[in-house]
Length: 366
Image (cartoon, rainbow, N blue to C red; front, side, top):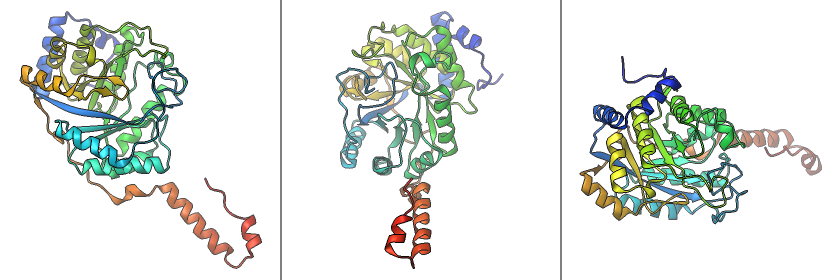
């Protein structure tokens, strides 16, 4: 039987998760060595380019406008400031730059145009560019691809059955729809979930099943541990143990052998020994820097020492795929072209009419 499968059952994945821990780690480590270099870990940097004020009600997120947290709403960062942060991250060893915006969905406006410029410029720094901007239309995904986007992050968070317990302002199918738009644009997909939301073990297995049974496994699968934040509905949730994280990493590795498993939120609370077990079980990426969007993360110097202790080396950019080529088509949306064509036709039709007649028939902006 092939290692790569798309027909997992929840029961099968749950059985893997519940294997004796030493057996599970051994099996996952063996699979990891079969498909990946076990001593190579990608260093990524995550920057919040638009913080707070989000209209969603994700129960774990301090950026939701409806929750009383210490996160203040801010406007979009300037392109030059984002580029400076990317250059600094590259000098610190990062090969991927991830840009996050607290939006429900992308809108075709000046902010999106500026994000496209960020993507283009960072791609030219020879860094993989990943964005997490909320839901995308098919055209928006294509414009990001044309600008040079390497990956798009859109986590499913939990199982389909548990989704409405965590978020009510969008559906599980909304997330899957954006996955389809990303795939159609030829951008690699980054999608995973969070444990510690109050979910059952069956939900954890269900989340992995949804990803593993998609037509193509996500190239990247972030495994996050909830970081409870005061003011959010989940502020009183207990933090998950390191062994739960090891089990999730190992199970994800076994059901999606070719994907990069990303050790994401919650790493601040892990000691070096716990992180080492995660790397052994199949984690092939970390986020470096003192913050993950708005939650704490280990300092870069701590990671340098950890890599030295474990004999790990940073992964080079574009090891798993080619560097995207920027196309000028990223600059103009189809909607804008249609509006311009509509205005051109209107001007031609009304060129011989009086000013009063023209004012009465100005086409409405969409």
